[in-house]
Figure 1 (cartoon, rainbow, N blue to C red):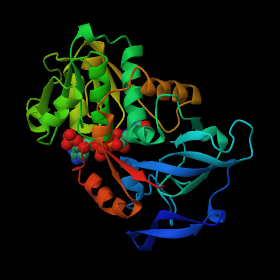
Figure 2: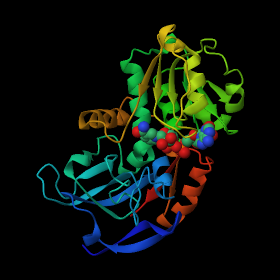
Figure 3: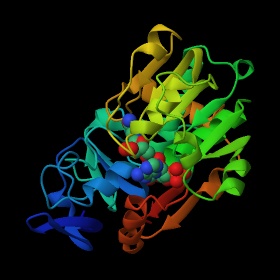
Length: 329
Ligand SMILES: NC(=O)c1ccc[n+]([C@@H]2O[C@H](COP(=O)([O-])OP(=O)(O)OC[C@H]3O[C@@H](n4cnc5c(N)ncnc54)[C@H](OP(=O)(O)O)[C@@H]3O)[C@@H](O)[C@H]2O)c1
């Protein structure tokens, strides 16, 4: 197959990492049944951590990050996938400890590969990416738990981020009244996605000391953790549902049991890396059908491998808005 371009992270010294676009040989790719010519990848928070030497995400360097890839099968040793098939690969160990999607090729186990659903292009699939899949999974969980638009407002935290912005758009599309929590001055962007109200992070944390707060939310999509998740749970209405998928602010959660034993609040964890293929196929299919929203193209900025380094810095600083797609064709 020959040479391919990739975004490589190398360890230069104790806690010192460099990032550059390199040429590698496809023979260096890890083993797997399916070789995919990547057309698009996307930037997720986990990639920013992997690209800056976070050992909780990536144990060994040199390494090619990228937990998302969408492209065309070039070679396959299993009958389920044939050359020319359009596919999505995301989650599992891709981009963590297995060479990832910030490259023109990935080689992966066939169990990691999802067929591109009808109704999405490869580019749209990466505009969504793991962030969109996770947003879809959070929203689906609210629905599975019985949340209905008539029951009251839904809070989305980290609302201008990838998971947050897509959650706002899907929920609004389904008829929910969404309150978007943000640290940025981005009301117009969030209202265009369908948010009915925009709340500032500072204002939100003002009264958080009490064990229970006035009931406001019938459901929550939380991407931040820490005091934001604590406050959201304390403000969740009787038998409301809180989904927790992220730790952009903190991995901690300091709470009393009162929201659970007095209000019957349900706290549900969401993982997209290891969830079953059945869930994966179903949620991708919903993202292409009933969860599909018209603002998707406006949410994403398309960049090259060369522009990735700056985008990673912006993501770590929390200053990005929406999604970053990396074009590899
Ligand atoms: N469980 C899973 O499988 C899964 C899958 C995907 C992502 N995640 C996690 O979900 C979280 C969000 O991912 P993402 O891809 O949406 O990231 P992202 O695009 O970087 O968005 C994160 C957003 O959180 C807010 N934020 C960032 N730093 C913050 C801080 N220190 N304090 C308070 N708010 C902060 C910002 O939004 P505002 O300025 O609008 O507040 C930012 O845009 C991450 O923790 C990620 O690891 C988990």
